[in-house]
Image (cartoon, rainbow, N blue to C red):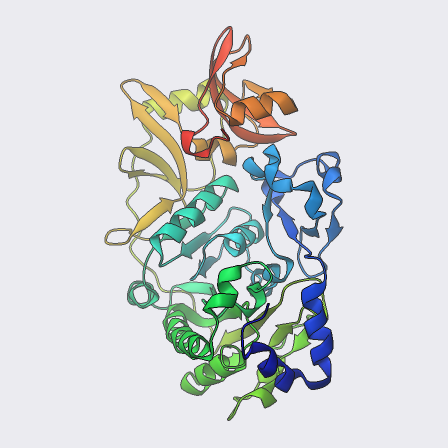
Length: 442
């Protein structure tokens, strides 16, 4: 059931298109997953999901919902991320490049952040921010699961970040909190929470977030604004107000033949370029719907330089562990975060005073002459020795926290269908399970 007033509003806006729009709510969901290029599973391991390509998303696929890929060990291994197909569009439009500084300002639960990470191929700095602490923890967990090593996960207000990172980023994604009209079929709360007052409240908040984002973008940088709603007030209206207030920004036309164009006629005093923004309507593609605007900041200058996070020397326990198991390390330098040793991007700025959930790749902890490797490092690794490939039954037991029989000794990296799952430690007869208790499938 649609909220009172919503259908009437959409009928007024869409006119002859409304019947097709309304009929889209009766068709089956078209769920999607996006493969992780860093941990790509063999095609045979994904065949049971009956994948077909999402045309606008690299590595994006539709899957048969009856196959439930979220239950596969490949999901725990970070071989793919379950993501609504429309939601795959904004990160692709940002076109992040390896080596750049990229900000995902409203990042939870992490689908778009991990998509940006894939495009950056482990090079550069990806800052993922979520103001809600609980949602920020979910974001951090997904960054870890997908084996991302060059990300900084924060939980800060955008205005506070703007004070700290003025002119710092090459590209910024603002997937703004919205009234969620594109979520009505997936979340009952989106229906019950909707009202015209909520729409207007969201529009005001979106403009505040965009103002902070503008301050953090270097001259010549790209900003993509997106929502999962159909409301003109939150889409063309928000972008129009932003452009009127920020003369140094303009809408960048992009080649996206799968999507409709924005509707300048749906708002009063529309700024130039609204016709180049993008609408993803559920009656015109296989997805729940989205809106996106690609914005360019005038000028051309490098990002601001900030003091770097202090580097530390790698403890001998870590060096010995790497030599023992043949474990590789990503690019970057070592840093300390509490008791943990991290490998962080060289571009990482000083973190003092920020609410940090994750920084770079957690390697583990040095404890009295021995090294305890972190689960995050296992998920990043593609190969280490010794290692053990698990069967379906062994993977099920490992993810449940059970021991496994094996003649291997010492730290062992376990994998499933070629994708690393986590650590175990062998005594020659069995492998002690080191899969994190909080993640176990009991």
